[in-house]
Structure formats: C-alpha cells, structure tokens
Length: 280
Image 1 (cartoon, rainbow, N blue to C red):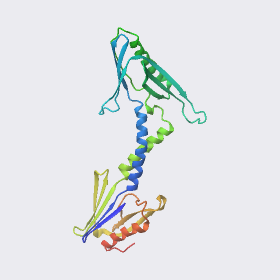
Image 2 (cartoon, rainbow, N blue to C red):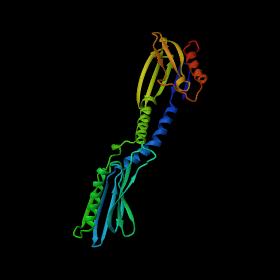
Image 3 (cartoon, rainbow, N blue to C red):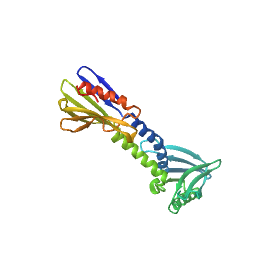
Image 4 (spheres, one colour):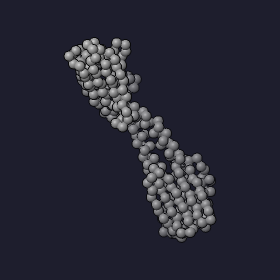
C-alpha cells in the first residue's frame, strides 16, 4: 500500500507491503500450531505417586509445556496398574508414506483408563524399550506394598525431527520462509522530499524497529521512472535516477498487488511534479 502526504515544501511517500505481511502471517497462523503440536509430543511427563493405604495409591500427573508456563496437573486416585499398548500404521496405497506405530501407556484405575504417554513412533526398536521400562517401573511400585512413594519423569522418546516426513518438511520450510519474508522483505519504506533542507530522506524500517536512513540531494535527482515486473503479476515500483546514473528504488520490492499501474503512476507523477521533473 502506498500513501502520500504533501505540504508546500514537503512530500512524504510511504510504502507498506500489506500483501506480504498478510501472506506471511496467514502461513504462520496456519502452520505454526501444527508444528507446535508435533513438538508437544516430546514434552516430558512427571508422575508422582503415594501409597495412602495398602490398596489405595493416589498420583499426580504433571505436564510442563514451556518452562515459563504453569504445569498442568491431573489427579489420579486409585492407581491399579500401567498398561503398554501399540498399534502399527502402514498405508500400502501410498508407498512414500513412512510406516509408524502409535505407542501408549495408560494408567488403570478402579473407574477409568488415563493416558500417561502417547507417541507417534517411527523407530519402534528404539522407543519400545523405554516405554516397556516405564511400564515396568510403575507396576513394580504398585505391586510392592513396602514402597510408599514413587516418582517417574519421562525423557524424550523420539524427537519429532528424528524422522522428517514430507509434510513436516513442508510445514517447517513454510514457517522459515514466512519468518524470512517478514524480517527481510516486509520492510516499510518512507521517502521524504524536503525543499527546505534540499534533501530526499529514505527510511527503511524492518520489524517496526530496525531502521536504515539514506539521504540524497534533490539537485542530484535528474529523472524518475516506473519499473514494472510482469513476472510478479504486473507489480511495479518507483525509482529515482541520480545525475551519476545510479538508480535508487523508493522501495526494494515491487508492491501494490491490488493497485493498477495507472494508480501507481499517479504517485510517481506527484513526485515528478513536486521535483519539477518531466512526468512519466
């Protein structure tokens, strides 16, 4: 989007890449929660149990999503046993899909089954040993009346990046590209033509924080042209030409995806008239 503000001695033109911001933000909003869901699979769980009576075991299941956020605690009354479950998935219709197993440990109580762990495993030979070991530790405590308390903190079974499937690569690359676009291509460009001090000041701002300022004498500006890029949907940008022949784009990107070249030319003509240049 391009906006202009003009007084008798000053003309300010602002370029803001709204289309770029919207596109990158949409991709982040859609893909980041999906990727975070994959990462949450690796969150360690902590199980703390106490034997209240001979046949009564009460537990707390604690999950810490992030170090700075409060932990989620589930109270479990009447623990009776832990049970390991596993189910294989293999899509024979799609040979490119990597087979995996869904492995779980559930905690059995007098009234319900409570999920303790649930993992999507691509290397069961590595993960099953850990899962069976944790199941064995819980059951050993349940079956040992001499042991009054028990604590188990799980470790990462299999990092999500251990096997990068095609959808995971797509999501990760999309997130990286969106961040790259916002940081390096989503700049705000503000160009001020000032007859009082005789300079054009160009300010480029990234992430609304980092700023680069350049100054050019108005006397050095000899021409102005409208550059069009037909490979990007007939987008365009305004470029000034100095006496040395050097070209200075007012914005580093070709913008105005929803603005016709005719409307962009109006902005260029305002600058030309202000600088007393021949209109383009």
